[in-house]
Length: 440
Image (cartoon, rainbow, N blue to C red; front, top):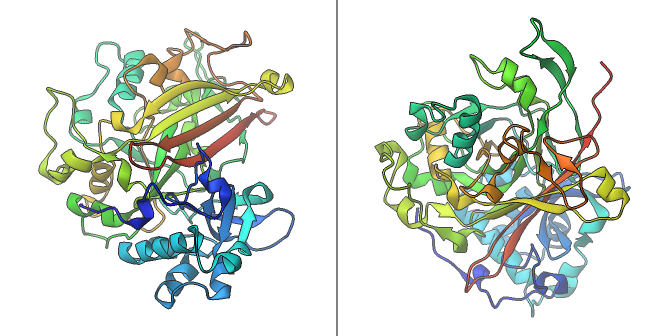
C-alpha cells in the first residue's frame, strides 16, 4: 500500500494559471482532478478535462497539439474521452506519468505555456457529465456515529446490530438515477404508512433528506471469482468525489423490512463532477484506528499499513439555502461539518470486503462511504440525525425551521484537505435543489 510523494505534491509549486495560486482555491496545481465537460451552448461532444484554478485543461485539445511526451500520449487520449473508464482502467503508474506531464505543462516556467493556454476553458462556461460510466453502485454504512444515531431512533434498546462491528454493511444502489451536480432532484412519491391508519397512502414524500457521503471510484478491476487483497487496494482505487445519496425517510420506514432500502433510495443520487485522484490525496493520508475496546477486524479486512495510512483527512461541509434565503439574496449557511477520519470502516476495507466473495469490480464502479457523521452534534451529516427524526427542527438564521427538506431548498456539499507543509486542495461542490413532486 505504500506510496511516496513526488514533485507534483510540492507545496512551493506554482502555476502560470494565476487563479490556481489564490488562497483557498480548490484546484491548485497540486490537485489536478479529472472530470468530463463540454462548453455551454456549443452542441459539442463531452470530453475529459483537468481542473486548474477556475479553468479546465481540455485534454482533447492537448492531445491534438502533440505537446505531451510521446510516452503519455495514449494515457491522455484515454483521459480525454467522454467517460473516464478507459483511463481509470490503466495501471496506476501510467496515470501517474500523465499527472506528472500535465503538472509540467501547467507549472510556472513551462516551455509549452503558450500552446497549453490555448487549451483552457473557463469553468463558468461549461456543463458537466458524470465523470464515468457507472455500471455498479454499492453504498456502505461506514460511520459508527451515524449507525448509532439512526439505530437509536428505530431500535432504542439495540441501536447497533452485531454484524456491524465485523463487516462493512452495505447494499447495491441504482445506477440509472445517478446524476451530476447541478441536476435538480424531484421530490419522490411513494407509499407512506401512518401508524394510525390500516392502509398506506400513495403520496409525495414528506421527510426528504440528504446524506453527506464520499464516493470512491474504482480504477482497475478484478476478475470474477477472485478477491482483492487489502494490501493491494491502492492499485484498484482511482479517486474520490462528493456523493449526496438522497433518502425518502418516510417511504423507507415502511418498505425497508425485510430486504432493506428500495424506492426510498433509488429515485436519485448526486455526484460531484470532479474526481480527486488517490495520488493527489496522498499527502493527506493518516492512520486508521478503531476506538478503544472495539474488536479487531478479521484478517482479510486488516493489514498493518492501515494503521499508518488507512484514512484520509477530508473535511466535509453541507450548506443549505432555502428559497426564502435565495429570494432575499442571503448566502447559504453551513449546517454540518464532518471528517472522513471519523469513519469506523476504512475505504480499503470497503473495497476489499466488496470483492471478498469473488465479486468482479469494474473501472468506474462507485462505492459510497455511507453518511459520514462524527461524534459531535455539528457533525451529524443528515437531517434525520440532526433533528432526531424531525422532533427538534433545525433553526436557520433567518427564522426558518427545517425538520426535513422543503421544495426550493438547495443543498451544497463541499470538501477539502489541508495539512501543514502541503497545499490545500478541494473537491469543488455537489449542488442540488429540491423540486416539487409530480402530481399524484
